Length: 376
Image (cartoon, rainbow, N blue to C red; front, side):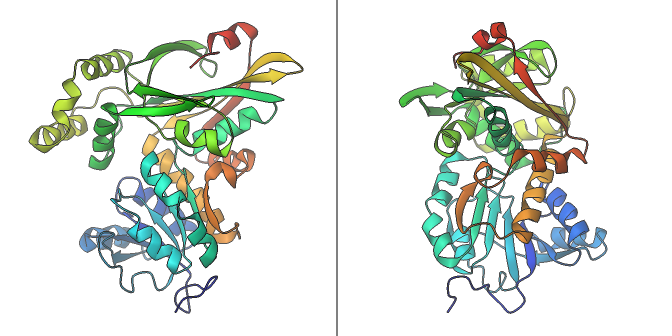
């Protein structure tokens, strides 16, 4: 029987990356393998793919078979930290981790699943383990950008998060399926204790990007920060999305409004759409995330902004998740379930990620710009 605070197995020192040979998983596993050689495991249902990837790391990463939808057996016996880079239909694997006092983190961007994990907080506390969510680019770095931009304001009214993704990046099947599903999503946000119903791509707004000194049009999109930050930081938040190609941004938004994206929800049409997106890429792999936090300083309205830019959204997600994993592996965080902004200070985290050519900027907006972003 495993008691609170015990690790499963006598040598629980391994870091298991479920989906560790996928697009993002291999970035996480490779990064951690450099720091903890021989302690990192790339796991998944396809053992051959895991072994082929592990062989390229020359022993820094190991391979293991793991199916999250079935009994994990003894696959977790030597594990101290589990990182999940796969979609999960339920919390069965999460519960297997907490019952073995294994620390847990997940790159999921599904607000509903994240809420299910957060509901397990008492279990993590009981077994002396820590779960950390929102650990990628968005959510993740964006959460910390909001925290950073809000820290020097006397009071905060709200925040908006603007994300530009590069259509030229090679995205995995799961990422494209997630985008298709979210494109047709009707969702609810809590805005100053008022619940507003929204639909992805239905609402548009033009905003000034301070980090690039230019205007861009963004569209409402169902990203998790607007569901979590009102609870963790007490800041009503809106999420807005665009792509690096301006014409493609408007074309995708228009296609969604006339119902075209519904055709790709499942089946052969979805498969053909995914293959097309992966083969015929338009634009670059450049991404940008900029947050605007509106509040007051010295009794006057003021907005602070903070941003991160770079190349490869998947790479940024993997590097951010790996950096969080290093801390979770080394540092005794309080047991329970948290989002990244509840445990991590932005400055040190951003400093570590800057070594990987991620560019962080921050500043204040003028009164005119403050008025432009005053409403969601």
